[in-house]
Length: 494
Image 1 (tube, helix red, strand yellow):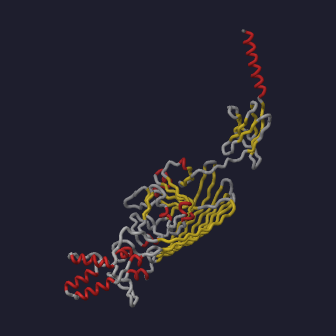
Image 2: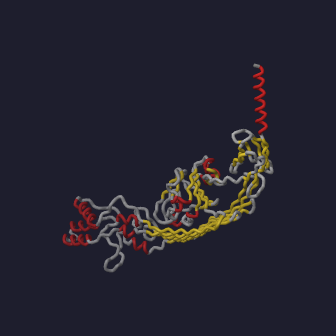
Image 3: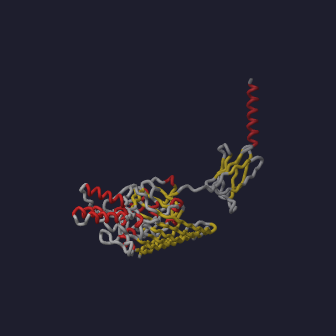
């Protein structure tokens, strides 16, 4: 029995010695295929075991492996490789970079951050969403694209500023507009007041109308205190950060975009009375002893004729004749003041560069008529962005936008007064005429003047120039620590 046990132990030792004798030393070098230089810090281990080493400064390694082993080469930023050892005693590999699609990043001010690391309330709208919207002022394009962002517009005139609210109203007396940043430069949003009372200065402001939204790469809305804190008290109402398109290394690319369309007024949820219906309505009121009152625009002429017949000022026959004359007229004042408004945009851009220098240049022309007569916008823009890497640590560049806007606008389109064409389009009596059919002259309205004639001869025009420019220099002090200085100009003038 003891002899069998002794033989078993000897056999186990022999097998273990034989297995050990089959282990081999494998040497090699891990290199960069582009330069041929050795890669230090690469992990080399036997697959399925804890046996492993790390390459030296020159990329060499030495490891003891068992028979039929598979070596795995791994490093951050490099594609992993597996090599079967077999009978080889020397294995060298070239490891290529592991290029993956970048995750979504957001611009918060000083830097770009990955979506996963951001804790504040941030929404990013990208260029593909902006380019498809045919609106001249980019602030209106953001409506419905960012939770917590409300944009209302009190006018249909082209280029009108929107009233932007991020998560409600944050002040009673001060401005409630957010802070706008374009490529690091704060831009003025004049004309958009806390109450957003519509007036000519609101329409004439070209801060946004002079910018081409198709030049924007991203629009990031910073909605809470943690996201907007780096901008200080000016960010109390939130921040909208805009980054413009930039050139990319590679062959120069040219693009031309053409867009054409038209705008019409929305369909009303009610019907207006024609001449026959309006005369019947006034006769019904007269029979009931009710006088049609209100502004001179809506006071009934038919009721006035009936009243003159009752008081004996005119005869019944004369009254019937006057009512018959009115019945022959049927003017839809909506067709007088509103129109189908054409829009057209032409845009050209070019971008390109190399590893050192990159550029983006664009030029655009937009013409847009308003749905109301005597309103419209014509815009010319030119943008040039340039970025240059002076060395591995120093980067510099500049961005410039030139914009020219020519706007036609109305004195007013709100309020219950005779100068408001929107009001007149729905309240003016259908049995009144725009012009005398015989002389062709304008017929004065109930307020003593013809509003259409007044609008046609008005010269409410505003021409403005917008210049937005900045330059920057960026320097990497040490890995992970960068200093950047930025100079900017925001100019608007007539």
